[in-house]
Structure formats: C-alpha cells, structure tokens
Image 1 (cartoon, each protein chain N blue to C red):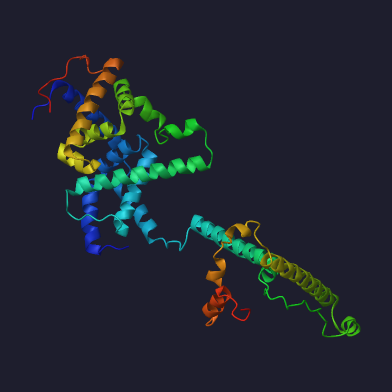
Image 2: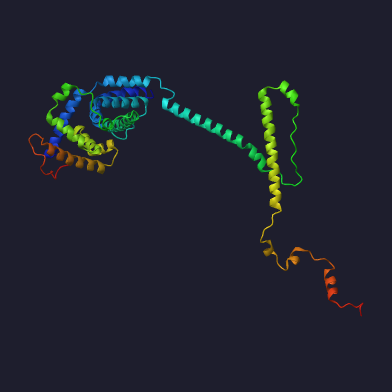
Length: 191
Length: 182
C-alpha cells in the first residue's frame, strides 16, 4: 500500500460516511446491478489504498469520489463486455445484464410506481440519467454534477433539462405520478 | 430555490429509490477489508495475456530469422555466379579433390562423402555458369548497334584524330604542281 497510515485513517472515516451515497451512485452507474456496484466500489477503495486514485483537494471529496466511481464503472463494464464477446455470448446477453442480486422479496416489495419509475430511468440516455441522479438523488448542485461527469456546467444543465423533459414524457406515457398528470406543461420558472 | 411541482415529484421518486438502495447497501467494513486484502495480495509479475503475446512475438521473430537464413542459403550459388570477372583470358579450372576417393571411403562417414559429392557438383555447376556468363559478356562487348552508321559524320576524322606536325605542309604539297615534270 502506498498511503500513509495517517492518511488512510483520515480517509477511511470520510469514505465510511459517504459509503451509502457511493453505493447508490455505483448502482446508477452499473445499471442497477447491486453485485456489479459492490465490485466497482471495492475496486475504487482498492485504487485509493494503492494510491492509484489520489484526492488532491481540487474539488469536494464527494465529487472526486463520485468521478472515480463513474470512471471505474465504465472501465469494468467495458471489461465485462470484452469478456463476454470472447466467450462468444449470444447478443441478447450482452445488451443489458439482468440485476442478479435482487431477492424475490425485494422485487415483490417494490411498488409498481417505483418499478415504472426505474423503467422510465432506463430509457434515458446515460448522461441525462446521471445528471438527474446526481441532482435529485445525491442533492448535488449543477456545478458539482458537472465536476463528477467531467463536463462543463452548460453541458450538465443541458443533460439535466433534457433528462427531466424525457422522464416526464416517459412517465406520462406510463400514467404514474401520485395522481398528478405528467402531461402538464413544464414550469418555466423551474431551475 | 423553490422546486416546481414535477421536480418535487421526481425528487420524491428518487428518495424512494434511495431508501430501497440503503436497504441493499453492503456494510462499509466488509467492502473496505476486502479491498485491503486485495491490496496486500502479492501482485503477479506478469499476466497471462502479456506472456502469450510475448511468446508469439518471439516465435514470429525466430521463424523470420530461420526463413531469411534458408532464403540466403538457397540463393548463394546465384549470387556467386552473377558477378564474374569480365576479362577474356579467364578460363574455368576443373575442381580436383584433395584426397583420393579410396581414402575417403575408408576414413569418412557416408554423410561426409555425400556432402563432398554435393560440393563438387555445386562447383561444377558454378564453373559452367561462369563460362556462360563470360560468353555473354563477350557477346555484349562486341555488339554493334544497327543504327551506328547514322552516327557517322563527314568531319568525324577531324574530331577523332590528332593533327601531325608536318600535316599541313604535306597536304599543301599535294596541291602544288609537279616541278620535276617540268
């Protein structure tokens, strides 16, 4: 390990505090597969321990950590795809892997609304989904979202606005939303 | 910043999602210690794909070396013959073995005898090719162009010969009348 014991202990406490949010972000990056998300998170912690990912204080620890999780998830996904291609898997197996870590009880308990919401999220392009997750799930600002995604704030805003619009359209088609029609006009005073 | 109605609804849905994810989150301790154990594991000095690629490269290089060596061996007789000396005085000399055949058959291995025969045959072939090359060279040097006559001009003699000291006087004399006859 390349880090100081002092550094490790300080970082461990912070990482533990952010662990729940990190896992949620990893789930979003790994197409809601909890096994893959856990593997990605473990790889990120390993990178931090080996000094391959170093926090230099350029942004907040959370945005830095989330950026590392995002890149690691993308790398792992590419490796998994290559591995599957090498084993000459059938095309339908490569496209979208089924979340294998979900127990039957969990899936039963999930409400229909939540299921449809998650299905609607899956239809969004990756960057729009990421932007919405970071703003609504992680409560990050658009600037912090842009830092995590590695884009300009203008691009982040664009992804956010388009994601919201598309999600509204998808949910409107599915007729869900706590009794409120999603087909209503967008509020011009929205952020 | 006040959220619009639909944004509140999106946030509510995401909050529900976050709650479900919290139930499925593995413990930090378990993930962290697994990462630590991976970090402490001795790393392999090499990986399998790197070794396979290196082995393929080495085999390819060795194969290339052997192939080029084989090519140079098969071309060797042609290279030796293609540049013989072009003087007409050269005549091919017969190859004489240094030891008598009787001695060879007694002292040498059959493989050595075969190789000596092969060498003698190769030398004879080389000499035959050399004489053929010499004949070709002679024919080339004596060749004259069919359009050579077109290159000759009336004043060519002036350009190709050097004037002699008494030339002018000798020529003049031929124009002068014969005084003796008078």
